Image (spheres, rainbow, N blue to C red):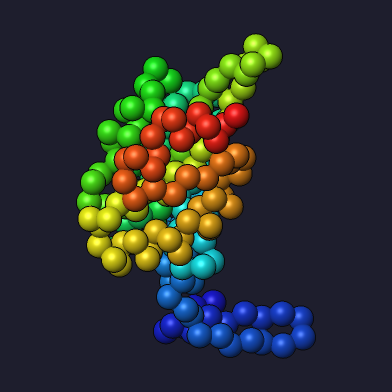
Amino acid sequence: MNLNGIWITQSLYKTQVQPLSYSDHLKFTIHNKSTTMAMAFKMATTGMWVTDECKNSFHEMKWKKVHRYIVFKIDEGSKLVTVDKVGGPGEGYDELAASLPTDDCRYAVFDFDFVTVDNCRKSKIFFIAWSPTASRIRAKMLYATSKDGLRRVLDGIHYEVQATDPTEMGFDVIKDRAK
């Protein structure tokens, strides 16, 4: 029961009175806003929430191969990690690199398909933490502290690349890491 910012819970043995924290308030407002945010996942380190759209898009990319890449962004006002852009199955790594802004941070996942020396088809999922030097310091700190929480929600990532300029995340870097 919520009574003016105080959360009261009753058990068989005692009644507990706890202050209603901002994250609890955010959780209730998110769950009541719409059905698309009904399963938001909280990242404990920064109080950020990952929407179910992020997790569902990732699973579609991983299992159904519907997407080639997904770009995520943090909405600082609502403290939500949301999907910024989704690349279709025909798009490649160059389109992903071009979709990242030069003055703001983003997260991205990329499904890299390749053929091994033994002529076996393989797929590896890369997590890219994009933090360009021209981005704001506050954004860099926010993205750096929220990264591990998002990675925990997106289960099945094989490699991580941290980049501050396009040369650090070139296609050659991805190919070398996958083999």
